[in-house]
Amino acid sequence: MSTRDQLGSPDRFGYEWSTYTQILPESKNQLERWFGSTGLASCKDKRILDVGCGMGRNPYWMLKAGAKSVLAVDVDEGSLASARKNLEPFSNAEVDKCSVYDLDPRRLGLFDRVTCIGVLHHLQDPELALQKLWAMVEPGGDLILWCYAREGNGLILPLIQLFRSLGSKLPLPVAHGLAKLVTLIAWPFIHLIPWKTEYYRNLRALSFKNIESIIFDQFIPIIAHYWTRADMERLANTLPNARVTIEFVQGNSWHVRLGKTTSRGKLLEGDPLK
Figure (cartoon, rainbow, N blue to C red):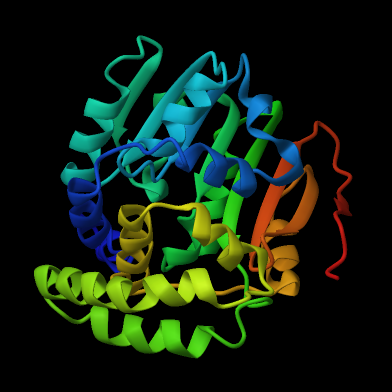
């Protein structure tokens, strides 16, 4: 595994997805929110490449939505083992070991849709990763991203960064134990505080185990970018022949859809922040 891959914390996420292996029914609604106005139903009849598949949760719901096929890739063996188990019932699913930096259409082919959900913001070189993802999209197809936003996280972001600065340096079992303790403390506040941000209100509908996995997920990565809308526009504008839609979703994150055109024109669209 390259140093660049290691900085993306695949071993730490591999521990997470080897621990939280169950696909919970509530995770379908989570993915639907990350898909913004594009909608999960738009996966129907598409050949999809999901990059950074973790334990296979997102590909699972894409297949349930009628995807023609899904190739799920990741780099950590723990994640891949869980993904293979979860996607085993689907004859049209394949799981492969591949870094985002090693994506090659000559080996894997092109896809109607490439998805990278909650991964790009953890990478050391997101610009290069984005170029690699884009190269896998068939003309007329699209690339779907979901990334952390700086907007909407202003008050809680310092606390998240404090926990991450500690958790990313701790041995994984210790970080896991700390996440369990924080979840116990946070659970009543999640349900009692009148949250203004949609994301935090939606947490109330999730199970304790799901909340625990989310908190652990925030503890462990070495890198976690929180991007502004201007950052997302800058990243999107590095891609040729892209029709770009950027949406602010759940009050704290970005849904980005990049449609690959055959012309040299580029159109940036999407709802302004409110």
